[in-house]
Length: 231
Image (cartoon, rainbow, N blue to C red; front, side):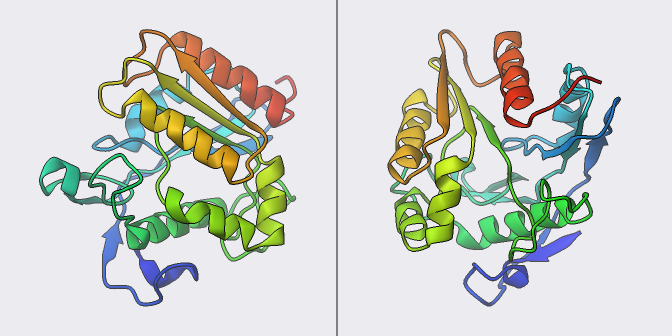
């Protein structure tokens, strides 16, 4: 499926690129469907890699949607093409943000959720057509950090949502791809921008991968914050 940056209203207004997204893998709930989560892979990965792991988690009431990012030239790899949700030049606040790529990916994710049950948990009619109930990030960092505070402070509704939105960030101290300091700084930026319900979890000896301790904590956190019941 193709998406350009003009597909949502928060971008630059005119699409100059079209993005071809890859295959989406879906892990259907084994029990009663209580929540849907879109799980985004990292640079160079694909949706199928994570769908295999997510299928093994003890969360029978979650439907997992695992899309695959477009293949595009990525600056941090010297322009070599790989799957990426947006272009990346550096994992830092100084790197210019690829707002066009971010907008197109956000629109694509919103479209994936647009067919989910509109019961207040999944959709509410906003421009992005989805109401996020929780956010989890493993070994990641925050793009657009320089403009986030102004966007939140400039909207009473955004500030109210930021204050209550549950966020769970995990990062290994030995991450040799996205340094721990980038993850820690991202958590601090979110907190200072008004995201009050945020947990930043540090793992000693963990590199740029996941371990059972981390996935167990993610499962427990999702169960508590999404109000999941037994299967």
